[in-house]
Length: 205
Image (tube, rainbow, N blue to C red):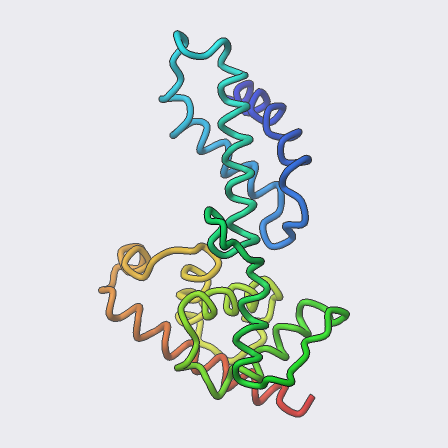
């Protein structure tokens, strides 16, 4: 197994170095582990020696295509369509519907941007569409803000599974041994608590 892991690492290193760029929220080390699991569970069972010259060439194409696809999906909404747009635009667009004159300075740190968006969005949680909500809360987690704000351990766990691990509510429910409506209720209360805490902590900045 160790030899095979080294073999996979030599395969994935160059691809990640070339294609997995500007991805601080999902570092290369995490992507490498994910790719190893995909090679073992998904790609290898599909290898047909009669149709591919070598196993390495087959795996290289599969890994490259998957990395390129996932990079686009991380960076863009509608990534597989001609209407693809950078995900960062999602928060800007929603902010401007609430405050047309708002300007989130590009020179701000990621943490400062998330806080500014949060203060704008806080009174309008019910108006946030699922894609905007997902992008915002995933950036809260990436900016290491979640543990600074006043949410319970259970609420934090649910938010991390939903928005960091990108799980669906039904999957989180199965993982935690509860029903899906319970996860939905915890999510909603966690989001309200997070915005309330964010306003209290940063509202005067």
